[in-house]
Amino acid sequence: MFISTVSEAFENLKETEKQVMNCVLTLLENDEKRLFKISLPVFSCLENEEINFVKSYVWSKIYNILSGLGGKEMNIYIDKKNSSLTELAAELNRVFYIDSKRYNRRGYGRAVNVIDRMLGALCADAPGFRFNILDISEMPEINKIDTEGRKKNRDLSVFKKVTENFAGKIICGIDVGGTAIKTVLVKDGNIDSCKEYNWFPAGFRETRQLIEPICLMVRLMRAKVSLESLNISSDAKNELIRDINKALDKNASNDYVLAAVEKAEAFLNGRYVEIDAIGLTFPDVVVKNKIVGGEVYKTRGIRNNPNIDYEKDFLKLTHLNDILRKFVKKHGSVNIINDGSMAAFTAAVENAAAGSSELVADGIFAHTLGTELGTGWIKGDGIIPDIPLEVYNFIIDLGSFVEKQYPSDDLRSINNFNTELPGTLQKYCSQSGVFRLALKYFPKKRPDLYQELFNKGFVIEKEVDGHKGYYVPTEPEDMRKPFLKHMMDLVERENDEVNKRIWKDIGAFLAVAWLETNEILNPGTARRVLFGGLVANKRCFELIKEGANEINENIVLDVADSEMANTPIMKQLKANPEYTVAQFAQAVGAVYFGNLS
Image 1 (cartoon, rainbow, N blue to C red):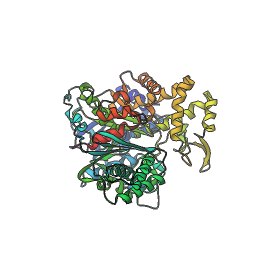
Image 2 (image 1 turned 90 degrees about the horizontal axis):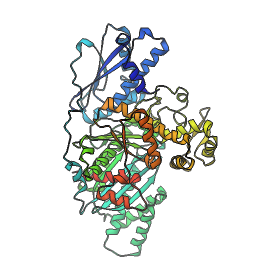
Image 3 (image 1 turned 90 degrees about the vertical axis):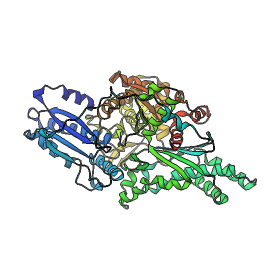
Image 4 (image 1 turned 180 degrees about the vertical axis):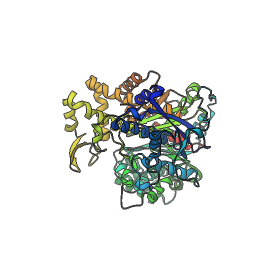
């Protein structure tokens, strides 16, 4: 039961059958005000079970607003003579755990944790977020956003200049994902090295376990370029270069990479080639180069570790930019951005390089479809709004009652890994969504394919906390990537309606995300640019488009593939026989982001 369907039904109720909750959000930037009118049925006509459903709908709408925009406070304007509506509004501070400590917040309260960390980074003196309940008579006039009247940006220079002036520079671009870190080193405008490093960050217990591999990738690239630039000839140097080249292989173990780097660093003894800049994309809320979210799947193991102070430990990750600064020259730069925002930035840069001013004029709204759903938005003038934009947390499904009963790690579950809230996009437009749909459709409609998942080791059955469930193994081998590749290959291998339906469903979920983001964010563009593993297969992408257009024919979906390779470095990536644009586009985008002055 899609939230967009429920919204439409409630909006279309007769005036005598509905009541309205006016939610005025004060944004972090410039104290801008946004008005959201939430229509809901009059409670006197409803049974208790129906009232509870309406309450969950209201909480979900507000949760989506806060997950997308953040904010300083939300004023709720209602007719206080309406006792049922007043009671509903008065519950919000409790439902969202406003007066609880961060470590005690659950469910909807996790969005408030992110907001409070953002407030700490942007407005240190601001009080924590809360809801204020006011009478409708006190409501100020709020101007509606006029997307039609927005001035279109025809000046592409802001996006073009990041592709220039690479002569004499060494820039490292890093794309941190849920299953891999992808790194590109560019020297004098040419790709020198690429590295894919597989990992499982959700299993980590301390922040240093996140930071150390990222630093190791920078050290690896620095060691390679420094050894090759060292003006001496020796067997020892040549052997170290061979070891470093082996460490660049995606199958090289962490121990091998670390040993090779440490040996090279000992040999170099400080004779490093200086890195001019590092650009990095990280899957969490990032504000002014600081990682401030702290509620994502990648930090779940750390967040749930009872032996540490999570807030104190997470601060190390918040200051990752300062840690990386020791690897760049004195006046070099370290630029960090959210993975979704990097996707939007990369798409804008590539479109600008092609001279596509019309595609950039309204800004770029992008999604990364991989381990999770990332979202990014860059306006036509190059500005990236300081908002959480945690669209993967948006609740889109208010039904699916059977799937709610499973624990979040069970492949059949629709419960969010971080918040345990059901029906969020995290389990719909992502790798987890593909796996979930396979276990939804295969047992009855394709039992042969269902059995194949077990035979190939993609799925195992095990008991957790006394309950039998189905899981993807991550040890001794992480089967998530092979499982996803298998599901993509099945589309062409089987060419059946069941496998097609899986990918069309992903598209339908993406369409509901489109409807929600349009309502909440109002970006002014119907186009969505898609990055990531789920759209690496052309047939899968076509099916995603079909499914999206079944929900709304106005949606325009583009894929970031080799056809979007228009800048010099992206063209080099396109020509690379080993690595693809679909794999490393974000890392190349990070190189350009690092080149921002």
